[in-house]
Image (cartoon, rainbow, N blue to C red; front, side):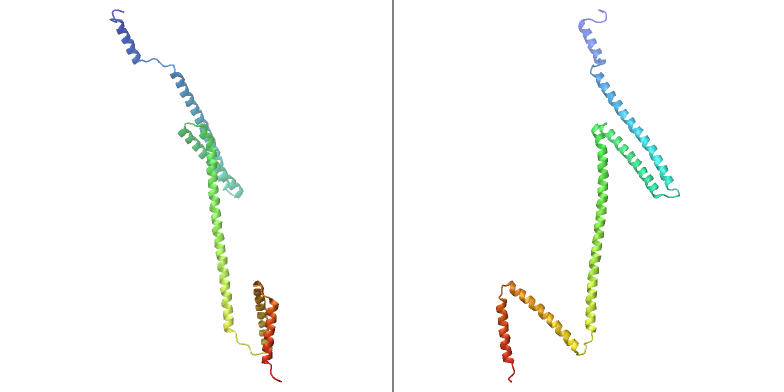
Length: 235
């Protein structure tokens, strides 16, 4: 010992230098490494589950695609073709959902909340697409309704102008009839109808302003009698 170290302070310096070069393992590092290993194993297990689902989806898609090819062969069955097409589309959507699920795990470190929310987000996107398609259908129906209304209105206007043109042509081309008793009777009938219409309108206006109808009638009768007396011829 005295040959290697000159004094006790040299021994302390040598031990300190050795500790600096080769620090002892901390007691807290072992749980930390264990936690990291557990996380890695958990992530690897989840990725293994996703890959298994991907292979299953690919196998199912192959089967659905074969069914779709068989549905195109004669005899052609529309229902079978539609079912096979829907099956292929469903498997493709399943693969897309698995892809989104894998990307979310890669971006968010396997967050459980994102994993739970992902199916609902996909459902919301699907509903948004359906709503957009319905809105487009409603807009198309509105445009069709507007076009039908325009065509109907234009048809009514054309028929009205045509009828007016016909009346005008008939009036212009009509030849005056020769004097006859029937013509006189028709004219008098029209005059009587027009007079009755005018009288009814006049009475309604007089009632609306609260006139005394009886007094007005007596006044008219008195004026008429006076005119008759003046126009009477002497015998």
